[in-house]
Length: 204
Image (cartoon, rainbow, N blue to C red; front, side, top):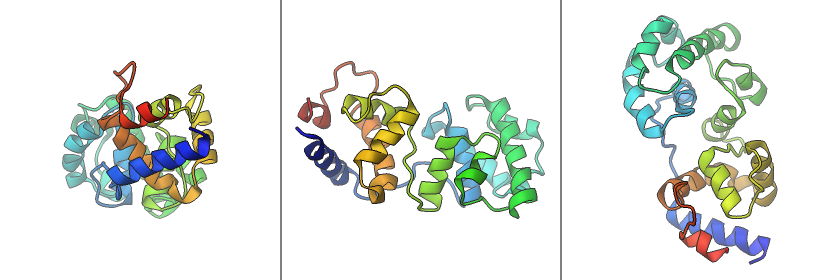
């Protein structure tokens, strides 16, 4: 299967399974979405979604979040990995949104990446899903599947992101990001040393 046929096959399978993929993280606005994405680093969406309703009930805006102490935030998110660091970052991020961005989540990669706890991947998720700007955030599922499917050499997520952007149409990036994550969770898990999912079998 040549590259073009492979891309068309992968896209057709993902479109048939997940025609309208929805953001898997519970949120009510761009601020709560940013907090949820920050919390999801080295954690599962399921665990984040168990924690965030209580947090957002107390603080669903930067102005409300800064009313909580770091310790209060930490207690609410304590079941999440790296809770102490994330609590500090969330509170500091909220302060900066108020002081530098009028309390709004900025729609700019550079401004987002200046915020504590917000790296390139988190900024990419926000830009693609909150602001509908073309981006291809690479998480562990996408990194794994890109390597298995021969779309990237798998050396690092930066290279994987570049390779995927080169291979797929720009207008499909935001949708594909979610589709590949969902497919990886459901059909092409990491624990499988030799995956027999529909895509892996077809492109061998």
